[in-house]
Length: 551
Image (tube, rainbow, N blue to C red; front, side, top):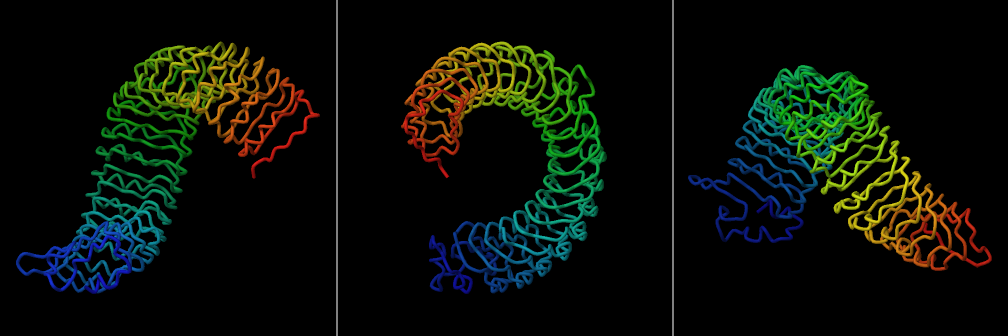
């Protein structure tokens, strides 16, 4: 009853039945022992309760489970809870607690689960006394504002299986003593400020399934010992650090690995073909490093990855990869949905066999030196949602088969040497939101069928050789939100009145054309415009025109 009295809000009336007229063992959330009718469990999770946590809960000396998670409790964690020497489970996650973790919790020597995550305001350093909890199996302290370092004493928690400190403000090195946690299955230290090297001693945690050290400031090499000892590892996340050196070939011995993410580091050397031995691999992230192919003519890693039948995502962008794509690309996993080779130095022709990767939803080959024509077989990729081929040296016409990609939401062919006209089939791209065809050698009339792409939010046809008039259907794309850019072409006649329907667009640029006539006064309806460029045309300047640009 004292606990109920301290609450400031019980919006769901969850504790309305808490009164002295009935046995407390029948109260909501209360469980008693059969023999002595003493309270052994108090579970009020998700009740919407608001207020401080009463220190009088420490009087429930037989309590084994205390679960007040997913409420709006605020204030501090009572130090007196350390007197609950029978307590096995303490769950106070998803509240608004704003205090340090009391060191007195170490008095609950039988604790198996501590969950204090998602309080956001839980602060201060982690008490080293927690290392005395030899029976603890789960310690969840993530998504708070904890500072300081990980106590070396945590290496004494010999029963620990799951340890989470992600999304805090911790710093210092990762203590090598954690390598003594022989029962550890999962270690989450991501999104902190840890520095120094990854301790090789973590390879002694041979039962590890999930190791997440990403988004820190770790330096040095990836321990080669991981590949020798962590044979059960399924997920290895080391992205967003300052790791150097080569990717250890020994990682191929982590035969259960499903996700390997080494993105955003300073790794060098070749991408080891030994990774192709990872039979269970589903996602490979190696973006934004300094990796090379090991060959100027081929990409050996892609050949090796054809041995990974469950591979769903390949991210190799923003490295120094060279070579060409071979027809053997069709041997990659039939489950492949994401394929990213962007920002490299890969050349040659795009093999038509790429059209056999039928489950692709995302294909990014931008910022390379591909030449030749765009293979019409891309039209077979009926699940494709985003296609990036910009900033290459592609030539020839745009295949009409691209217009058959019914799920395509983004198409980028910018900065190539494409010629010919926009295929009329583009009008079938009903899901298309972003269309970038700028800086090519496209010519002819702008296809009115573009106006059938009613979901378009971005249209950039600038720096081409389009001539004739601007189709009314295109000028009337009312869902354009970001920009409408037809500048640096050879467009003629007047600006269509329908342009006034672009009430949400932020940029309109039709500069450097041969447009004539008056400027439509209806442009005043384009109230969201931040940038308007009509220059280098032949508009009738005697017509009075006023438009208020958005702030």
